Image (cartoon, rainbow, N blue to C red; front, side, top):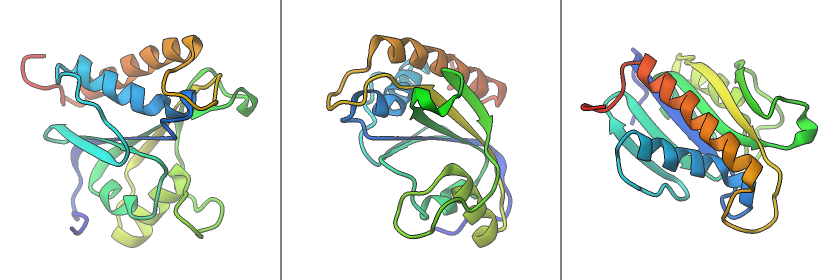
Length: 176
């Protein structure tokens, strides 16, 4: 698939993290709740899964960001990355930040930062979508599948934020 030369009014939501490390997998929980609240049932998004619930809206969960994501990102007007952060990051518990296009860190391996994905979309495909990071503070990163109560509460607020964005873009499924 080649990246389109014209971006439509569209939204790509990319959650990433290790869903077997409790709060590090908050993005997977957020995406599942988002789909439920969009009325799409309890479709579970596991590793490297994606769902197109509505034309112009794609929801994707990855264990880590890879260079290959740049091609897909180039096809969207807006990309929202969803991840967890540790309290030591110094960010608000629920953080919404613009992502600047910049190659951050090395290009060795398959673990990139959001700004690097956007920089690659620009350099390789000539498209630089607006990008944001929605980050939720994690409290427990031990092995396990459930979220800590604190992170669970923040995850619901994150879902509300994403629903608002989906609605603002006119991408709500019919009947919602």
